[in-house]
Amino acid sequence: MNPHPCKPHAPAGTHKCIYTHIYTFIYTFYTHRAQQPQPRRNYNSQHAAGPGPAPRPAGPAPAACPLPSAPPAAVGGRSARRPLRQSGRWRGGWRRSARLPSHRLSGSFPSPFSLPDRRERDTGSPGDLLPPASPLPSCGNNEKSVPQLLIRDLKFEKKSLAKLMFSPDQENHPSKAPVKYGELIVLGYNGSLPNGDRGRRKSRFALFKRPKANGVKPSTVHIACTPQAAKAISNKDQHSISYTLSRAQTVVVEYTHDSNTDMFQIGRSTESPIDFVVTDTVPGSQSNSDTQSVQSTISRFACRIICERNPPFTARIYAAGFDSSKNIFLGEKAAKWKTSDGQMDGLTTNGVLVMHPRNGFTEDSKPGVWREISVCGNVFSLRETRSAQQRGKMVENETNQLQDGSLIDLCGATLLWRTAEGLSRTPTVKHLEALRQEINAARPQCPVGFNTLAFPSMKRKDVVDEKQPWVYLNCGHVHGYHNWGNKEERDGKDRECPMCRSVGPYVPLWLGCEAGFYVDAGPPTHAFSPCGHVCSEKTTAYWSQIPLPHGTHTFHAACPFCAHQLAGEQGYIRLIFQGPLD
Image (cartoon, rainbow, N blue to C red; front, side, top):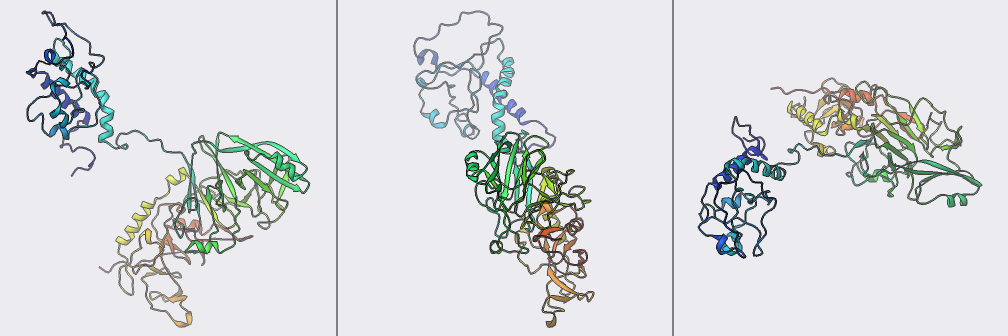
């Protein structure tokens, strides 16, 4: 069986290039053609336009002659074409089947790949054809001139033949893929939004290098006595940040274009300046209506990320984003101040919090310390509450530079930043699908019903299947769904495990489908409690110790796949499967 159906099948032991076969075919074709006698008709004397050329004087043939620089001129309104042989094989269908798009060879004879169709051959009159050119220049030995001529012609045909016979991947031409800065993944969604990803509203957003830089950097500072004067100073075609100190004083900082950076904006607004639309995450929400019914605490223009267009493609985060008028307004109630060097800075109403993990986003990762980012990108300790007027202390030894695994909290939604390099070490969706099939191939069974259990496909990750595995969260024993141990006084919340008699929650198991949340490529042997999302041991151990912001001043660990607050001593359990009896 041919492993490469796009390529011609070659016999065993044959390692010739396709161009070698083409060269051999053309060389044999023209060599055989040069040895054939001329046609019976004398086109030079009967059908030429005007008097024919004078006969060549008798004498020895010249030693060498140059190749013609251009084909002879057309006569009778028809292009130059060789006279046609009258044999049945010449007129048969093999010429039609072998015909490829026309690319004229550079010589005095036409390319065998640019042949006239049958209708033209049958209806064309001899008077419409040019005088037959010699198959090769009039040299001392035609056969010796064939290889040099064909080698030159093959150089012209090589690229066109490769485009026809091979795909772009097979041509070994490196494609210019766009530069990827990283990805933002929203915590609480298992691979996609409940109603699907649409447009700018999705659970995962990739940041690519823009065709044209749109970054900005601070430039001129204006001090106005009234807000009206500040609006006059601010240009609608230029980015600016307005700091309202009082009703009588406003400071406007203008920003100019930066050709070395790209800017991406995140927020709740659906206006055009927002690249990534984020809504509030409701734990365990099954539809977008669940999130829209809650009053949002996410800012319409929450934050912006500035990425350098040149290696190492550093990404930095700043609080607040520019609106449709390319302005950022910090009102009187927002925390703002003047720095030691005379520049202005401030915080948004609910703030933008960032946490950088220690040791990167790996198996050995440890949680870092949550910090708040200002409008100018400075790092501060947390305020007493999210909307307090008093800012925290400035942390000078930390920066706003994002690293692989950094968490960004927008007071209602938490984002995970993954760099392009970090994603290259992360298991893919195909890898997770292979792990799912491997578990199902082991044929785990229910200890009570003895029926085979199987994790549903990733497309049905939210639908309970009849073969769905269920687990007792207190002990970790995996069963199929049954009513054993369900007592009325427990209201169906707690069940007694038939294997160890422990009483606890009884929930279905779901495979974690968002590969960006995994810190390793280990098998899915553990599950979060109480939601039942399954992933690797290192992944459950990492997220169980990450305190995620909740509300205005509390933190707790949560499942990254559904945002449910973790319960139990560890927040996760080890799964105990029952193997098949046979």
